[in-house]
Length: 560
Image (tube, rainbow, N blue to C red; front, side, top):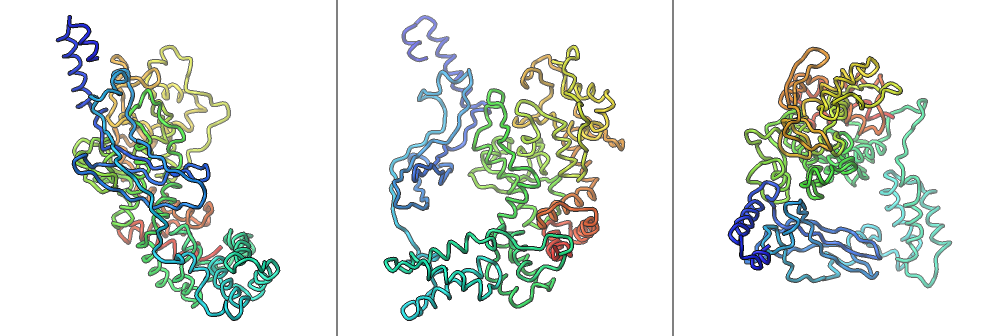
């Protein structure tokens, strides 16, 4: 544009003022409230690209930072690619000058990088020493040493004591395939691979038929507890307690649950349970339309998943009431999400707990962008999806399946193109076969039409074409009347209605944790234990940790 000004002196003042006005708009408009630049580091090993790091770089040119990333390379041909990972929305108003140096965008300068290695804390590395244990036997009796290694390795791999016959079978495999030209390290790989291919390693061996119902053995219980809280095999402490027969004591289980939740490996419980309960694995499956929501990018997508995980972890580890999962006065956000939500003074990519400022309608999982996104259709809100999600995942109520040939929401009614989703649903509910389900679902999903994700501000008007909001579009009515006559308005009204239904929520949460821990759906007979878990929670400040303790010591958990 500056070139045009120089070539056309006439009107130069007007063009320059317009140019400066645009620059000021890009500096101050919320869409251009950029954070620090972001770098992505990609390893290309054997022709397969792998992202090994992605992070913000808040340092300045005057005070640059140095970052060290550890990763594994092999002797294969490899390469490293550095990418700029900050997504800048391209709009009609800015595409013409995005490539210009005057455009106010985050810039990243990489001065140098080097690859250093190999780097080991010890040699042979700890993983090697865990398998090929130190012993004098190899020099005197190679087969005896292999037996010693396999017995120790198989006990850990099978998560139980192994029989002499099982060990002997793997020793015979070693002897049969021993190549005199191979080193011991090379030759022992054959029986080790066989162990890792065994069903005893790949599967949890528990009775499954109803007639086989029995109490789990100590080692089966150790595995169930470990996969419940760590999503991994039991460690040596659990195996030793199982060998000593101490896992039948509720006090011992209580101590182990406390220890395991304090361990960093419990992050897998947070990630996997929250992913299963809240449906976080669906985030990104139906991303918002880029032309409607240009601020939605990959960094935001990973951040909204991270928020839900970090929020659940905060409620779990702070030992606060589980009702905070429904309504809280705090959020757990990083800088990217804080900018999106309009929460000031949050810096850095790490998630942290922050109090909610006045006027920010967040708090609890039902307001989080991850949940709002998976219950939208990419272009606009979906009260039906949202209401169904709340019924199933917060209140533990199955709304039922739609009747056959229920049809869409009144696609041919005159003026339907200008109607809000609420008005369309009202027309849909006039059909008796549709009202059966929608009268239960729609009120729970109608609250959030004023906070449609991935927008971060409330909408006041309905939308027509692809979610675009026009000046004359109808005002949104965010009020709702539940089947029992309860009335509420907006997000806060929904939260209060859910808090009033504490028993339903805690019952739902207990059922979800039981389902996750047992690895199966619950039946009618299981509800007695679920209700007992709710009572236990209410007697222990309604904490998630008290629920986990109850589940781990319950009859359902100890039996198959």
